[in-house]
Length: 193
Image (cartoon, rainbow, N blue to C red; front, side):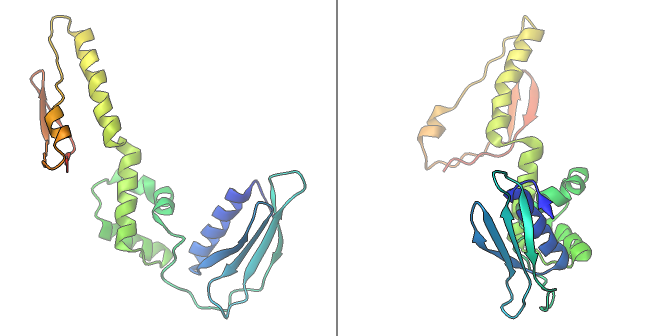
């Protein structure tokens, strides 16, 4: 088998590991050689691959025997980034889905137990991808302000930055509702420590 580069090969091996429910580890991981073995010590499964001459493509040279170990329900290859790739569409349709439901879905489909922290990281990652970071969201307020001034020529629109709360690092300030030009904007809470 031939893969485009190291990253594509590693992603394919991780996907295989998740589908087969058998944890793996990369033992030899250099620019030109990659060796992957099963984490179970008594299992003889391995994959050896290397790059082709003057090319980034990775060629699988040797694949060991089939797994002799048993399936395991916990696999670290199924992390939050992998979950984000796999289940993003499902989460976009139902953004209020609880993390327990996601864990149950992953177990039902792949027979993998996903840690609670992994599912929380997945949910945070997806929300960041969908709506952007808080800094990006607050950056859009300036665009909104300039658009108000452009569309409504007689409107006076101002935005005030509370510098005292920035200076005082010990004050906790939670702002959930901001008023601008008679409109209510719901914003994510901000905690200043």
